[in-house]
Image 1 (cartoon, rainbow, N blue to C red):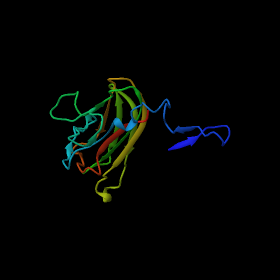
Image 2: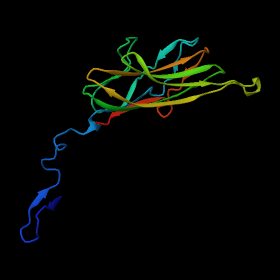
Image 3: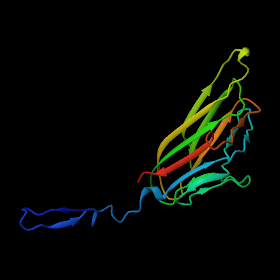
Image 4: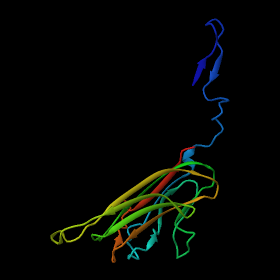
Length: 177
């Protein structure tokens, strides 16, 4: 695409749009983009008020190769680690297979510190049987190189499994700029 920047129509001065623009040499923000899930496999939780790291076992994509999937109980797995500094958007969704009337929480961590949290407390009449929750959390973070982001879940109840379906329990993020 070209535009004429001349002062008069007699002597056109054509300029290619984006040529020499400050943003022309910048890689697109989408070069840092991921979506992970549990690939259909439910995850049991510790319960009793313990906080569990969600074990992400499958990537739909990881454009910047910045997400480390869970393989074993290594606490450096199942997290996004920024390769470049900038502002990032993160979104997490967790759905339970089973539940209770207990307090459930979803946390987003940056370098081991909570930066966003969602709490859900359900009290129900015994005639309802049980409560199954879906919780969503999202935030924008300023990250430096090697900052890492994790999603964790906590429940006061026992015997709560997280739904493993890719459409129910997932974590995704991308770099804004």
